[in-house]
Image (cartoon, rainbow, N blue to C red; front, side):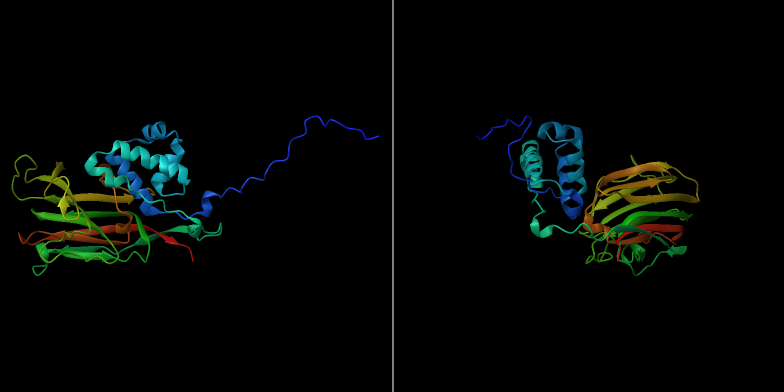
Length: 294
């Protein structure tokens, strides 16, 4: 006689789950992270607010903003919220293609990114009458890496001076035909005039300006009053989400997103717009770049 037995706690057979793909097996997409961050900024969406509107976790939103892999379902939810929040003239920013497919998947043993410290010699930069805006330029060799941080100290007694840091793409040009700025670069600089500029700065004030694609945004902004001999410690840093910060003497003066493509080349500029005999000393110049381990 056959005996039927009831197995207490027995489970019905289930189909095996498709193995999950670990985040580290997908490459980071810097351009994707930059576009998400730029669109969220334009839509005035914080991480917390975006998480609430999409139903996703704040960790997922932060992951998207840094360009690390997220599921296509999460991508669609984020893009949908961005399209609804952006104004009509800015909806183009929400058209962000999903970059991860089976073809973009990499092995877990993908090359690691390492930080490489670089040190440069001190340099005296002087006006060059034959150059646009009488500028002296110095492109730094980043050894094929992407800039993460640059620090230096500048000193000058020149009454009218400009000193700046320019970021530009691999195939970009150092400067334009008549001006330092071009339509492809980012330039941030400190300055002093030898006259009083109404509503901005007096002749003994230090001020700051930055340009994106040759357009000043915003214009001159006073930092502080200075002595005839200006000494300023500068630090420009770019984080994993491509947010650029610029500090002067330890104080934050600028914070903004930066295009990933602009992190491959860097040059220092000192100029006086043909007003006088410019002399700017640059010392303690160091940089940290990110490179792929060989």
